[in-house]
Figure 1 (spheres, rainbow, N blue to C red):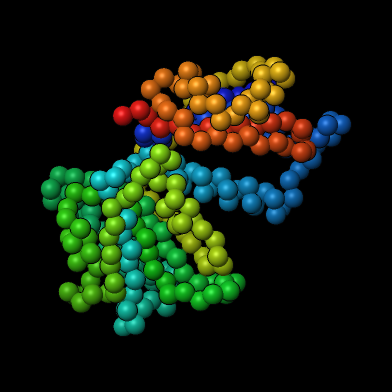
Figure 2: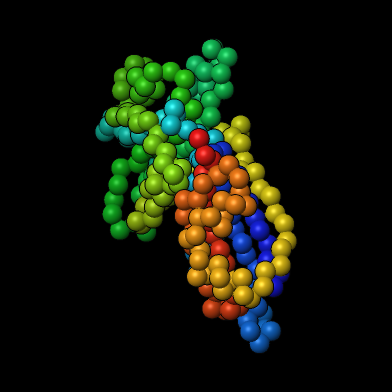
Length: 252
C-alpha cells in the first residue's frame, strides 16, 4: 500500500502525518469517486485551519513571549468589526515603532472576537494578541490607550508551552460558540517546515500500527532527538484506509 509521510517541523515540535496516496476526491471501495458534502468540506477546512494556526504559534513563539487581551470601555466601544480592527492595528503600529527604536522586529498574531447576527450569545468585541516579548509586561498594557486615556482593560500573560506546545491556547482562540473570530499575523512569521516522501506499507504493518499506535519507541527510533507526546489513528469509512497522526517534541 502506497502512503505519504508528511513531517511538519514547528519550532521545537514535530507533527507526522502518514496518509494513503489517494486523490483529493475520496474514492469508494467500488472505485467510484465520492465528493465531500459542502458541510463536511467546510468542517474539514475549519479543522485544517485551526491546526495550521496552532502550528504557526508553535513555530514562532515560546515561553518567553506574551498573550495580550484587549477590551473596550463604553466610551471607546467600536460600532463594527472594521472599526475595532483599526484600533487594534493602531496599537500594533505603535508596538512596531517601539520595537524599531531598539533595533527589534515585532512578531504578532491578532485574533478579533465579535458578535454576528448568527451568534446565539452577544459578546463585547475584544482582541487577543500574541507577541514576541522584549519589554516589561506593563509596557504592552499601558500602550492600550488613546491620548493617554485607557481604551479598556489590557492584560498580559506569559505563554505556557507544554509537551504539545501551545495547543490549548490555540484551540481556545479558535473555538466556535456562535461568535465570529478572525485572525491575522505579521508578515515576518516563519512558516512550519514540511518534508514529504512516499513509502510503501504492507497491510500487516498497517494493522500493527493501528494496534500499537502509542508505542513511543516506534516513532522515536525514526526521529532521533524527538520524544513522543501523542498519536492518533483514524479510519476512513469511505476509502477503507487508515490515517495516522503523531506528535513529538525536541528533547531538551
